[in-house]
Amino acid sequence: MRLLFATGGTAGHINPALAVASYIREQYPDTEFLFIGTADHMEARLVPNAGFDFKTIDINGFRRSFSPQAIIANVKTVFKLIKSEKASRKIIKEFNPDVVIGFGGYVSGPVLQEAVKLNIPTCIHEQNAYPGITNKQLAKEVDKVMVTVEDAIRHLEAKNQVVVTGLPVRGELLTKAKADARKELGVPEDKNLVLSFGGSLGAAPLNEAMLPILLSHAENGAVYHIHSVGTNGKKYLDIFSNNDFTQVRENVYRKGTVEVRLYIDNMDTCMAAADIVVGRAGASSLSEIEAMGKASILIPSPYVAENHQYHNAMALVNRNAARIIEEKELNEDSLANMMDELLADVDTRFAIEGNARDMAIIDAREKIAAIILQLAK
Image (cartoon, rainbow, N blue to C red; front, side):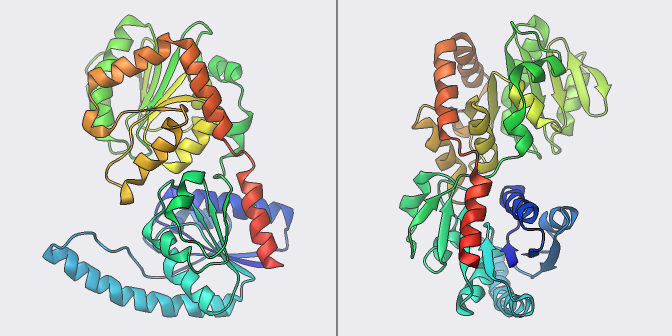
């Protein structure tokens, strides 16, 4: 069996594809895999590191602006698209896959469209509650469409019935016990723990709103708190250092019950231990929150395509499985008040946790793999 995956741009597209490919590789060791992506995004590093063959096409997305610079860039993108279609066709013919699978990002467009023209079985997976432009178009052409949440279905015109599969999450997130995680982090059983982060790069609005809250928690010791400023937020570490936080290891500062990190490299432990999770609303993060049954306060990024993080968040909020603060309403008071309410109201928090857990599809990897294998037959 020969499987070709097309995806790229962000970890939210790439990691689920790698999770599915790795699972199929475990079950069917003789399967041959090839990933197509771009040379200048994360897939160029993540895919080879995972042990899969990787080839590139030169493609980028269109700019959604009518400025002179955007118009010039979009004209160049049209020429790149034409070249990428030819390059995709060449790669597909050489590899001769049984199935071509798209996991989102603009790289999926030319690859899947060429596969359709060549009458090769095709399928796509849409991570977000509001699908991206590429997948909206591909849904009309491919043989099978898979989505993370049911909410996405009403935004798609698919050739065949859409299947809700969920989104794969890392296995360690499903097996970490809360008591063990809290012991590992040194959090007492009778204290609440808040985990907050704005993604691997960080989110300046969240860091700004959280700054006085963290300083307060460090002084009064009422709440344990782990916060990641993100790799773009190094300046905040200096602020904490100047407020009597002690550096305990590289890029990690602590004072009292508060620990501030550049990034979180043991997310399974931190999320398992947390009573409340505060962060953005990327599809992967939400799948992890659901899988671990966590109460969360979601602050969707308004800077992403189709405002999809807002729709992702509302899929939970509408089911009483999370709370939301839109970035335009985010400040120290709105965030602190919502955190305090959830921490104080145990019954409400437990209800949110249960509803989040009910949304989880923990066998997403297996469901997606089964559809791919069926197409291969």
